[in-house]
Image 1 (cartoon, rainbow, N blue to C red):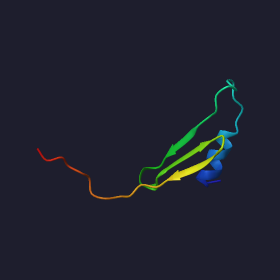
Image 2: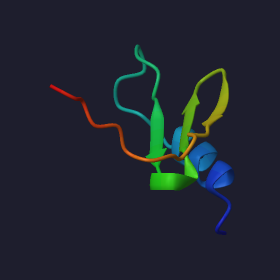
Image 3: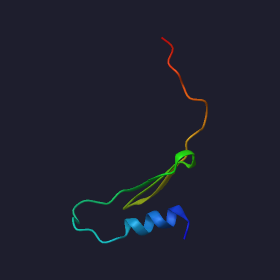
Image 4: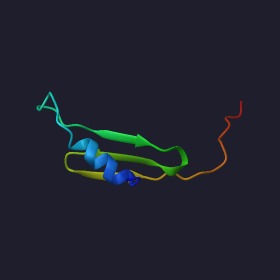
Length: 57
């Protein structure tokens, strides 16, 4: 599959050695945003694209 949400959920459900801590899966996709799964849910964070910011001295 190429569905990022499905891949993240499958990675989240893989067996763990340390069962006391939850697994957090994060996929960064550049301009496509970031996908994150935790035990309790799925989040897709989109980022606005724009010109790079340059600090003036």
